[in-house]
Each structure stands twice: as structure tokens, then as C-alpha cells.
Length: 204
Image (cartoon, rainbow, N blue to C red; front, top):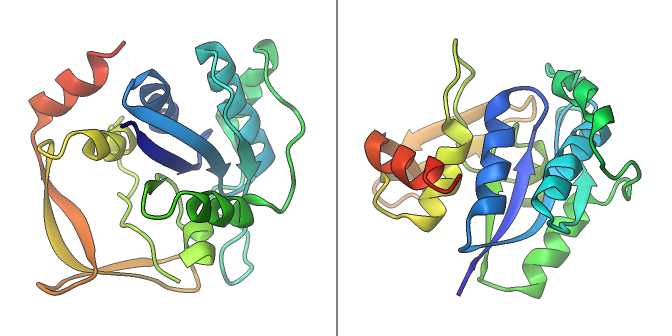
């Protein structure tokens, strides 16, 4: 049975989100139920996601999500620079506004216990949906494939090792992590790079 996935993404700020979405669209074991976007220019980010889905021939519901932090301040990622290139590609231009979090909730409730919420951007949408979310990797120099790695762990349980603990999200968007043997969350703390690259990029 395919893995049912909801993708929450800040696509348009860095290349790895686009690679992650391309991976999910190419992954035969993935049933991509929807995409929500987050941080500044969320609608432009939705257009970029739409363009990739069109290229893949996939009809995936897309909803622009929160653009500001939980305490109402503008996101540090105010602009979706990569979306400036989307004009030359077929894509949707109109999306339901203000529906992202409700869309996530409706979709999850429609498939109880079967949906993986894959969050690969700032966790505002996830926090609004749940008061907690998964850890995300800080931005670093160069290109790192954090986001497609997160997707790959859904389909390959051996690509990462996990540590149990507790994730917290503050009102300003800061994400905290504390290892705890009886914690409610798991975070990837080790990776098998060769397994990841073979499994992810072998699909293309």
C-alpha cells in the first residue's frame, strides 16, 4: 500500500525543496495527498509547486499557508526568489486562500492513522495544526539534501538512525529539541549517505 504523504514546504528559497518534491512525485510508493506552502510569498511558492506537479503529470491539491511567524512578525524568508522563473512553465495561478491548516486537518482526518505529514520548511503551519512539529535542519553553506532525506526516511527505514526525545516550537518560530528516552518524538541523528543517494537519485 502506498505511503500517504502531505508535504509542507517553503519551496522557492533553496533548491532542496524542489528536489524533495520531485522525489515524491517520482516515488512509486508515494501517494501525495496535498502540498501546503509556508513563509513569505506563499502563493508564489504554491505556483512553483504547481509547475513541478504539472511537469510530472500529477494533479495534487496545493494550498498557500502561513507567511508570518506565530507571533505575527514577517518571516525571515520574505521572498520566494526561485518562483521568479516559474512564468515560463504551465502552472496554476489561483489557490484557495486561508485554507492550508484546515486542508491538512481535513485530509488527516479522512485517513486516520495513515498520513505522514512531511514538514520541510519553517514549522508555522505544522505548529498551527498540532502546538508541536518535527525538527528541521538549519541552513548552511552549500547545497545539502536535508529535505529529500526526510522524504526518503518515510520509504526506507534504514537510511537514518533515530533518537527519541521531545520537540518544542516557541511563538517566534524557534524549534527546540531535548533527547529523552520516553519522549513522544523521534529525530534522525545519523544517516547512511550511500544508501540515501542510491535510493533517492536512482529514481531519476
